[in-house]
Image (cartoon, rainbow, N blue to C red; front, top):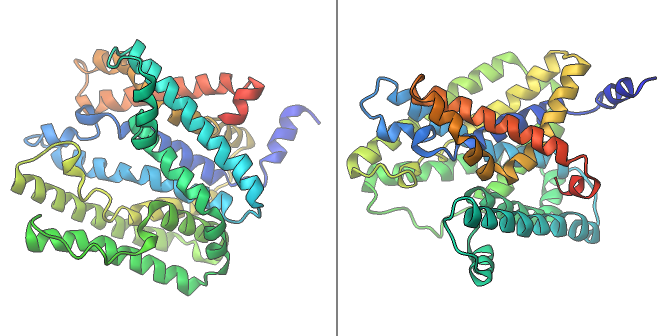
Length: 362
């Protein structure tokens, strides 16, 4: 048996839909950081006929980070692992990655962007208090998730189907409150913040639900009828978020990139779960060739590295956007730009993963 055939055979038990979701999610992560070039283009295109489409897409791509947490829950919550292994093999590893990639990002800003002066005090202070790159907040959240793994694993394995349904209901209920608050008080007040549920944390709800769909949901529960119904509900949920975003920005007159996102994540759990569920259903129903499976897995295994260098990749491929914009509309130029950044990143990480020590951390 040749090497390629052996590789294909090893894919037989692999959950390819998870690899596929990682690829989709990493593209959305990079696009999420394009500002008015793409992500929040709607804020500067209020008179455009495509305004609603831009706004809808901006909210939809917020499924990226929740998808990563769901895939991680599917992969990690079912494992058995000692506290020693958790600390040494996971927490230490990702802590070291956070420090190293923060240092690389900081040096890049100082050298390439000329936006900062080298200062060890500044670096250490921001490493602890903030993050040295916009996307690195996820690594801090992921580290918190790793610390919580022993508890989440117990929850995942002992919760009944009814428990998962109750969690889903509570998560939806608590996330609807900001909408109700704004409709009543127009931003001048909110419900009592002491009324909160621990499951509203991204690294609790999404990993648990990823595990539930992957491990606990019966195969007979995956039907086209259900995914179509969930898709319709998801579209309505995003439309509600679109309305609330437009209403708030119009009412306040503030279209700032950060302030306009108040309602972006409010109901995003619905399309996130729908996409996750739909991807698993699709790969259950459709047999794809071993070669295509290998291609998906190969690209998927570079997504973490792409995330780590996403700021650098976007900056270095920005000339693509600058070149295309005069010939295309802003949005198509941005979509192609981010695709180029992902392709470049995937190729770069693929090569770096050939180096033994670096491979372990990417």
